[in-house]
Length: 110
Ligand SMILES: [Zn+2]
Image (tube, rainbow, N blue to C red; front, side, top):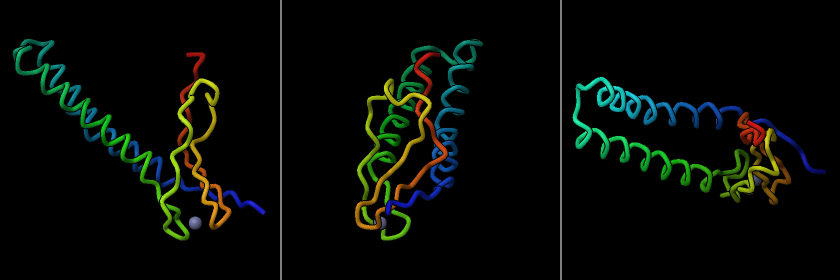
């Protein structure tokens, strides 16, 4: 029988990693807005942070490993609208475990 287990650490780690590039990205954006940094210098830096963030997200979603056996598991489906409000889960067929993260698809009604 398929077990469901919680992996809350994945969501926390995900948010922490997001903060590591979102906060400096906003910081640089604020410097440009308040005239402390020229747009020519600030814009590429913000684009770089966003690019790194998107790349890290893609890596994280595609390199989840089963907490029990260590197998690399398939990323959750990406058709977000159909899954709005639902948890991100990763299924390990070897262990028959659904790993539930504390991360939810965005609510499409927003
Ligand atoms: Zn497993």
